[in-house]
Length: 479
Picture: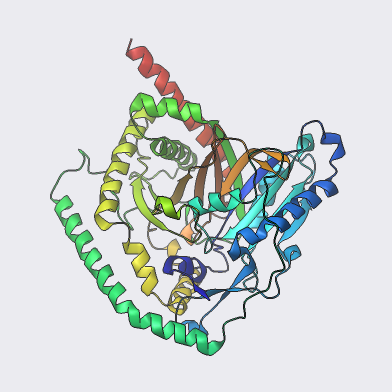
């Protein structure tokens, strides 16, 4: 019986009929060189399925299900699924002709809009056939309660290899599930943990006081000429990408050479994350301007921050905090916007250090799942985000990925696109991951609020081009 942390449990409790809090990855696969004609769809599926079967034991949560506490008194626990069957989680699908990126994006959007079975381990993998050029794809979908972005990259590595030949893996023996916890054991666990929680509450209160004191001191200073470098919850303007979300999704992708981002980063002395935020800002600014709905105040992005220490790199679960960063969408000139975003991220990092990044985790650790779940369903049912300002406008996540090419069951991974969740009130998630010299961005949007996700992806690509153009102008100006 392994208890979920408060943050892991929150991703379960805050789900609604329209907000599915799972994450994903889309791996585009080339067949082995010189053997393309020998690989039928059935052969490829059989190879991938066999590889997953041989390695699923390496990631224990993939054979565990969530057991909720009686009456929702405390956070759920992980327990072995005595009825685990691999075929409940690995299946195949086929794209309609012509099997291009648009068709794959539409299938991913459909998959991400569907809930995972809460009575089984919270994951699935779909082998997608029929891609143009003889390619296939593997779409992995896992609940956010299992992992965050950094641990997701580690989990994915369990099923990938550094070359066409699979690395040696100790084959699983006969698996025997541990007995499921009985109701009285669950209640005893909940009671004993709640007894210990006052110490957590005191620590959370102390950190909250420290954070408020820091914020008060900062309010006496002048962080920026126009005061726009800092953001707080509910300081974001209302916009048409925010509101009550539907259960339907749109998905689109962008890939750009990391060399382009490095060029912009070096020229303007910013970070790679600043450049990603500037690209997202430029794209969203264009979208809202085309809708005649560009707010006068800057949109605000929630930027997840990993709290993992090096020794925790391979462990699963969520070790996350977050920063609120103004995207400076009110600024027209791309390089000016980039530099303003860089000042905003610097201010957000200072604030994050002051709160030690623990306030969010402490609050969710204290929140009973039954209360959080009812609050989430009530907010969705009353459509409160159609009437209230959003806590922030969108989520932008940037995850470091593998630097060298990887293979999946003998097939080279030629593209790796991430998928982040869309939550109530927030109609757009943009997640980026670096892989083998490229930056891959996945845009998941609510179909009601952001139906133009494909167009938005093109706008973000254009925004990166604008930043590269700004580099050329800066170099000419320098002589």
